[in-house]
Amino acid sequence: MSYITHLQKDKKLATVIRHHEPFCLQPRKQVYLQLCNAIIGQQLSVKVAAVIKSRFLALYPSIPTPADIAQTPYEQLRSIGLSHAKANYVHNVAQFALINGMEQKQLSKMSDGEVIDYLTQIKGVGRWTVEMLLMFTLGREDVFSADDLGIQQAMQAIYQLPAMDKKARREKLEKIARKWRPYRTYACLHLWHWKDNPPAL
Image 1 (spheres, rainbow, N blue to C red):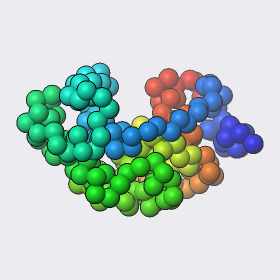
Image 2 (image 1 turned 45 degrees about the vertical axis):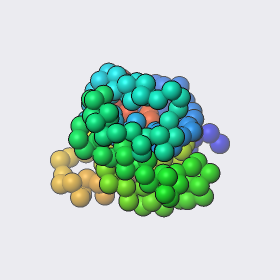
Image 3 (image 1 turned 90 degrees about the vertical axis):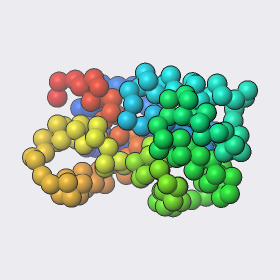
Image 4 (image 1 turned 90 degrees about the horizontal axis):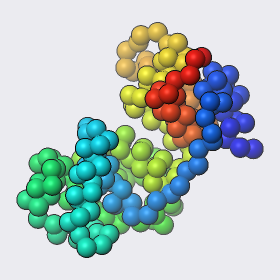
């Protein structure tokens, strides 16, 4: 059974899904590099983030290893447009990968929760960042990011939720999302797409 068939049991989500082709998750290599890219792109527009990511990669003759990144002088990371904090966080990711490991094979043996616990040990890496990594780099199918603003806004509109405090909202969103298991990542992908291109419900 495809994820579409399962998610369409939720009638409100079904109205969103039918307006878009099915999504396909593609796991990516170099997890440490994807994590560095996620940090670089935080709180930046897509356009600005793309420019700084390309400058970052241009520092190296080929795809950088964790050792390459760890040995890159702080001043050089600052020179491509990284803030003081982000330059440190990129170094933190590289050092963690060197010492503890961050390979696909290693992470594939961990549950989603274990990956979150493992990678949020790194200063500068929060839960939301690891949730995005689980979805877009590790290709995990059942991740729900309750703290993502786009997901919150889409679900509030689609399910016509009243205003509520942060804790109550999170509980409500997670309750709705439980029926999407084990395909919550795909539900999130459709919600993000709908928010950018909302059809009439």
